[in-house]
Amino acid sequence: PSVVNSTPKPVKHNILKVLFVGELSERKGIDILMKIIEKAPKDFEFSIAGDGYMKESVQTLLTKKNNCEYLGYLNEYEL
Image (cartoon, rainbow, N blue to C red; front, top):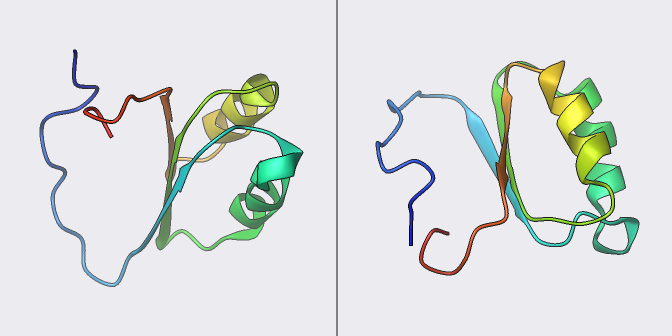
C-alpha cells in the first residue's frame, strides 16, 4: 500500500491539531466540524481522512482554509 505522506511535518508549538477519521456525512458529524473549521483560529490545524457523500463540500471548504488538509480515504496501514 502507498503512504499518503511519510515525511513528518515540523513540530509547531502551541498548535491544536484536530484529526477527523470517518465517513464524511452528517450522521458522523462532519457538518459540525465544518462549522468549527470556518470559525477556528489560525493556531488550529485540521486533518480529515475519510470518504462519503459530503466529500465535495469538505474539499471546497478546505481549499479556502490554509490550516486544513484532506487526506482522502486511508486504510488502516496508511492511517
